[in-house]
Length: 207
Image (tube, rainbow, N blue to C red; front, side, top):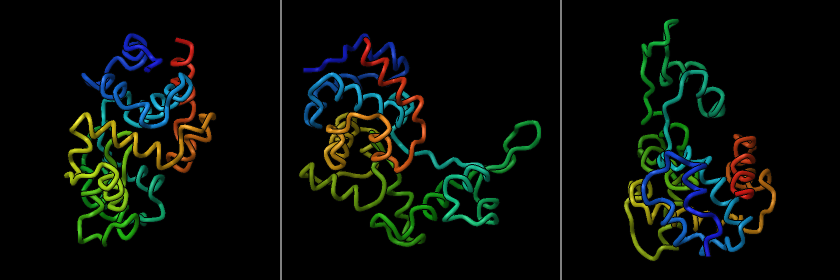
């Protein structure tokens, strides 16, 4: 049983893509989210991760500063200046981000990906809700599904988008997480966006 109504969902996520509520409603209990609190946590966290259920593929459109802030471990200043986007004083982009190279450098040789030359970083960048990232996670998700899929489908097929979130929720044992902060830490290893995640959770719970 879904405890969050479609009216409430649409009010909190007015720009969500068509059909996403039904896909979530059909699958959320499979993630172990039975109570209203569990379902609110799933929706709040996934809503934040996907910008209100509008984006299901990771953007690698980083500025020079953004690259250094997010992927400092993988980009020297010189690399960030080469691959990140640059704006002039008027705010116009004078150098576009090389998103493919950014993904291939940032995600090379980890999470089951090959080196930069393989292109695995770009191929297996984050998709779904929350984002699956890395070849290992895509393969594990496929095994759980019981069928082969193309990586791109995890950001275009509504059923797969939501089922990727179900698999992720089960894999991280998030249904038993009652704290928004603790759930956030399990999802992305930090507390990025915690304030918005908490607000979304509260709004879903009081509805």
